[in-house]
Image 1: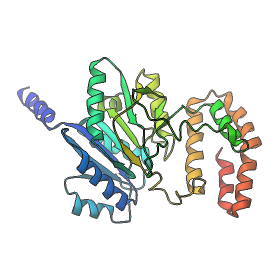
Image 2 (image 1 turned 30 degrees about the horizontal axis):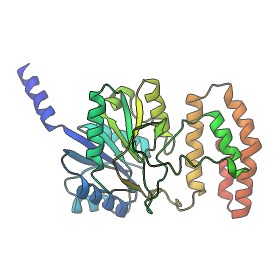
Image 3 (image 1 turned 90 degrees about the vertical axis):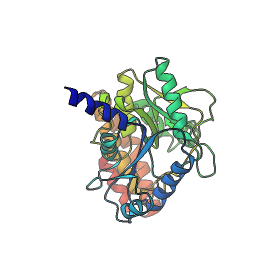
Image 4 (image 1 turned 180 degrees about the vertical axis):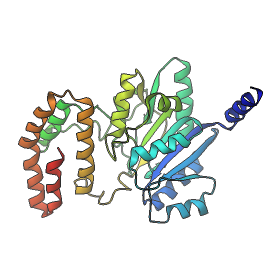
Length: 312
């Protein structure tokens, strides 16, 4: 019994305040810059960095060994996607808090300490925290997508309609206002999720059925159902360059991106929509989305867009 107690004490002594978890897929340069920004700006908090590599072929692992030997590098054994790779990182982590950070982000201030101090204060005040995030900045230091509303049939219908009526588009998610006070939201973007480790153990983390996109919305939907809040806070300053690990990502309408997005949306609907809504949604899709996809395919002369028709 004494040995088990001593071992427990040793484990507690080894525990970090924060585990920073970065999933990498062929983003060696971005990853180096991201870790450098963490090292430069993070002070007065005990942290570790875990990089889960999704079978990169660009020398990312060799770069980590040479430039950042103290970083914990985990080989995922293949390209597992965003959620499954993050789950591996979270299982490896020793931190009281887990900070999921994209490789295409740059910390501009002591963001990790800001998150840690706020989380400690809010938990002391009795808040049930699921996840915390910040108002992210783009490369020009303008605000960019940081949080959003849960995916719903009404929301998807409005999104389909914006392909024909641009004035319906809501820019509050893509260009959010800067904040001075905490803001409760439906979900925080997966680029910067600060999560109490116990929430991961309580809710199970990301659903491995999602490869990329919507997995953070799904997890935070489950946090909502468990009574856990998702809060955007003022203080952390983080640049999100967006799409660094996705081929063709310079084009928002790239076929690769849309295949991943459509596949994930389909999984999300099956999990969270009323079954009666699924055939209704398919009718909406055939009436509104297929004509748009055919138009894009004709204008771009790229047949790859036609693959998307079967993904709804």
